[in-house]
Amino acid sequence: MDFILEERVKKARDLFRQGYNCSQSVFLAYNDLLGVESTLAATISGPLGGGMGRLREVCGAVSGMSLIAGFLAPCPDPAVRQAKAATYALVQEFAERFRAENGAIVCRELLGLACRKEEPVPAERTAEYYKKRPCVELVACAARIVGEYLQRQNAAPEE
Image 1 (cartoon, rainbow, N blue to C red):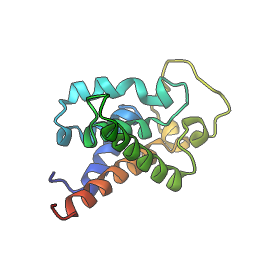
Image 2: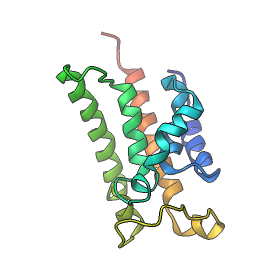
Image 3: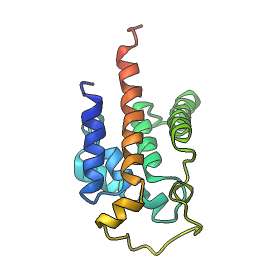
Image 4: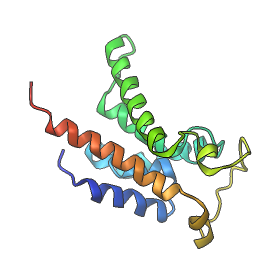
């Protein structure tokens, strides 16, 4: 997998600024490496924005990393427990790194919101929106975590 980390991080930020949600921005920063066409990638990851449909639960950037984990440590057969464990281990690794850097993985906690859910209509992306929301940097953080993982994997000696 040939890529330059900071280009992927920049791509994730740019995608968010273009209007993609947090999950889409992270997933679309790597969809080409995963062999997933862009429209399909945006469609699959779309419902996970806003902490899963603006329910403000798990941050969409973390969900985007989790989707990527499913491709990097696939488990297509539910009977293969080791594969399932490997997928879950990678999801947990990504989530713990994100939590260590940001203090939480729950959307409402990251945004300092008291509400458990919001109206389904997304907030308009204005200059004021970007000033008060850390989302673009959370997306960048998630993209960096994935990229650093991929760099470590590519640096690992062949067995």
